[in-house]
Length: 155
Image (cartoon, rainbow, N blue to C red):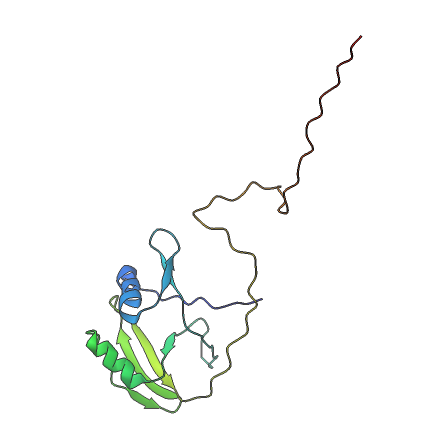
């Protein structure tokens, strides 16, 4: 079953935007290999809006207090757009180092409960560890019977 969502921000300067998300916003992440950072996100939600065309998606981050977020960003030297008061929330935007804009809002709409996730005990193979040879079954190790010597016949 589903256990999360993976959002992608396309950027003309991905390294700078990754550093911004890590160092300024404070997202924790993992190196998926070669410096390719993937960040964990707080609980999220998805909405579907009517549109003239498909495949146009947006990403907004949410906060409890947009004014406090704007003040924190200003303390870090990051400019935010003026806060817009909209029916569904209070919205600001920050410009990422790569030139893209990212919306941050304080929702005024009802929030769904987070989806309950059943965590699988199986783990994906690590990129740094080689896979075990195919065909070998996991399970308790079997003890081998001691090798039997052929009895020598004495005549």
